[in-house]
Length: 316
Image (cartoon, rainbow, N blue to C red):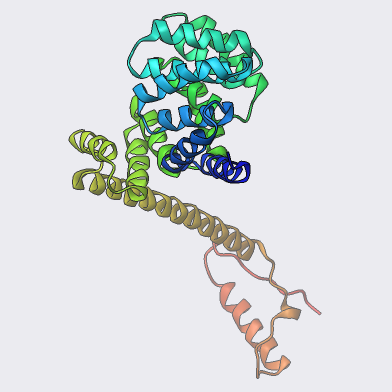
């Protein structure tokens, strides 16, 4: 065996696994295993590659064959994958058996605990599942896989709106797949009958992946309920215009009240302000002429009725 050539193949398989290129990882593993058939790392990557490609039966066969050549912790990894494969076929009893083995071998793996919790919840042990999820969160609070499995539990059971939303929001900075994230938000709001928000997130997901049949199906359902159709869009537009009109009307009302109060204050100040002869002047008129005009005004007012205000000038 050419060790250098084998190492190149193994490194290539590890690289493809790290970037999620599962077809290439599978092919690189198969090539490396021809040189070294019992390499535990290549067997692990090969099994996972089959599982990620949804080639369930071949993956399960590869995993079971690999168990004879693996150490304890590597076996726990394979048992977790086998549990995942059995869940796909609805064989939850056998899935629980495999998942329990993985947890018994490595009880400090948050992903193994979360997988086991999800299976226990599916089999009706929901209180135990919640405790297991809490243990998994304590071990890896920022694990996207753990949060995804836990979210799936709350999403299916619809037990806790706040917890489900919290898990989704915690997944946002950790997610590398915006389509799945937007689709999950759409499903979350749809389940809780918040249809406008669900429509918005499904549209976002469809813009990312225009070929998504699941998105198109959910948007069709929402249109049948009146959300997302032309009628719904017009209703939202009318509602938005109505809100704008109400806000503008309130602003005008407060402005008119303010102006009215200011006018009252100014008018009251004008009425109560005393008139002083010494300060009354007219531009372009001499003081003597101004004094004569004031005297004439006073003389004319003294001849009016008793209800008229009479301005008197002190004799000097």
